[in-house]
Image (cartoon, rainbow, N blue to C red; front, side, top):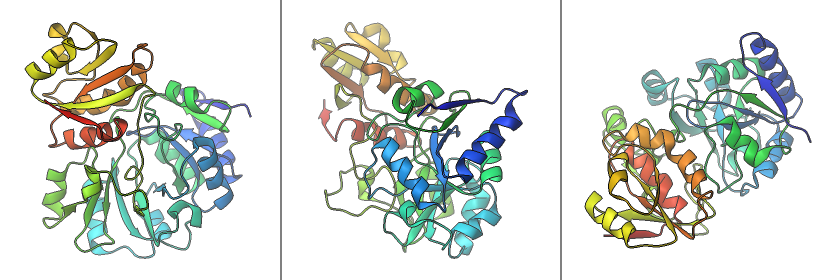
Length: 339
């Protein structure tokens, strides 16, 4: 299969959106940009198309997908009912990097939900994604990468993993958020945060004061656990290089990596001058949004360093830092070194 590259330059934009929508309506799969990461989209009502997504990614069959919509009328199509709390969440956080889990509507294909009676739904803010959804209808879309590898935040990342395995890609700029959406289930009482993202726990508590954080955000679920959201169960976001998450102060981290050999230190901008070993910076500890934006690109670059081991300095677990920590602990297969 040859992956069709669709330009989003002004002269080509409408034609590219129309072509991508045609592929999707006919049961194909298309990589599309969003503000979080690139998604691998299929029509949310077509089981056969969803199967192609799982096959292209090598995705575990019990890992549910997120349905992407462009307006609230589509929300009524893909959800069995829309409670008042969901309308509040939509008003606060949509369009944007936020996903709600509700009872599943009949429109949604069985394969999207991995056997659950719920469906994860979000309305992206990226204008290209929303134009495509308007043209093609609701789209089920996990990240457009090989399952388990770092998520793609550029078109180049997508092509490195999936070129020749998908029908087309919309060739857009790098994603601005850099980590997948926040996921909250409204199908439990009280609601639970299942996956942190750019919409932070602090923001969510203002909306749902009694919300709880699922233990799987920071602790590996049991192997046979049934999960309600993508990104909860499996080793994810991982370089091929053996990776460890390191907790401790900057001084302790610098001393630790300077004593190591055959490794790369994934560090904060403020630490680079003091680190003598090979290093990759993924942003400033004082601005966690930079860590989120550059995280997956740096994790992909780890494998170009030619070393045995990567040591990643852990961010704080507050604000967007919790989302970054959540991705890193999975990329390290829950191997944490405390200094």
